[in-house]
Image (cartoon, rainbow, N blue to C red; front, side, top):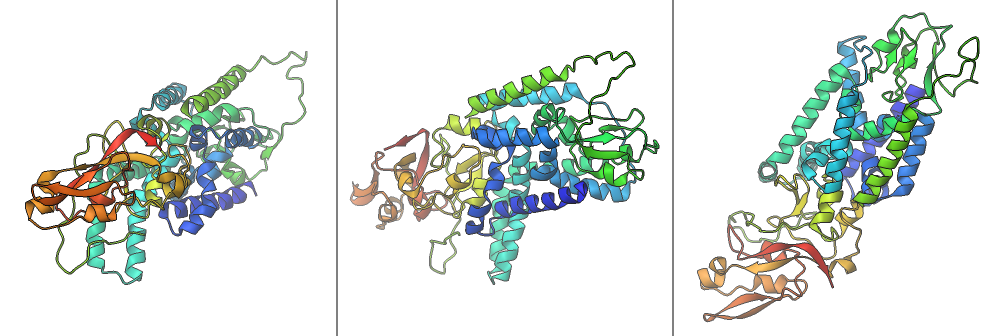
Length: 488
């Protein structure tokens, strides 16, 4: 019953998370966005102490059931492990815990999280890894299918999607490498990633040692057949000694299903009995100190961390825009500052998936690898849209309303005279001024023609001017980001 319940809940959870990243419906996303906010690392970064406490209590009661039900990357690994079980029967063996590897990686992860070193945190965060896999590999396929069924010109659309993939080739490569590595590990070694590399799994392992409900041996019934150990994907069962490593057990229930003699139970502890004839008390468990250290570390980390519109008309072939070389990247409105983004964002790319105008893209810079940046070749950040701030589960993008957004200065426009159509072609334009939603651009006389002048005090960095500028391949006006987002 435990295994069947776990599988049903896991399928429901991974389905909801996948639908969230696919962006099937914005109305649906608003209903199911809670599945992102109950993930442990996003909750820690958002300092959502209610969720953190709830997950710790859940682990103290049931063990690491979070890893089997709530974490989508864990559920995905269980799927690959199930396939591996069809190929290699009884393939697992009990192994010792790789403490040096687990705790070293956890220590490195926490340090990088505190100082805001994105390359490490984005690669190791499990929820974010699953989000990148869905957004980079499955989302384009889903969009192609939907647009094909809707009767869109497939050749044009497929070419456009391939172009997007090529622009985000680093993110695509990381996503496919992550998927392949996790699949290979899970096929042969089950939960090796979760119990040796994953920082969330290691953190929860501290609390799982003290869970009330555990998989327990009935030594009087056990026939030492070894099926439980051979089918434990976490390599946590030592049937010869009748012990279970609860720091690695993910409460999947596979061992209970395989036991033919009813020698394993998921139950509360029995009343304590004297372990020796003279009632010698058992030695104190050193892992209690580990428990207290884990609780302190989790609290300290939480405290420290704190539909696309085509605007070009006509029948002529239009040359695609290219990104300008920005001196300062543009982060989404509500991200407050580059420092806040670096310290809180795990590059799950849920905001990228939610952006209806294809403005948010994964960064290719090393220091901000795969974190969202704004780019305006295919759209601009519309003042009435605040979707990215509504879906961000970590606090990297603080929730704002459309009214708040018009007061947030994410960047400022810069005019490039050598690209401007009135100067290069001798024709009047004014497209940037007409479409500026804040009135930050006015047309002024320059060498006998009308050219744009930017009032940086009014400019919010939405990118409408850059996106709608007719100059190709580089716009005559583009947006530079602000390190600190000014709020009027």
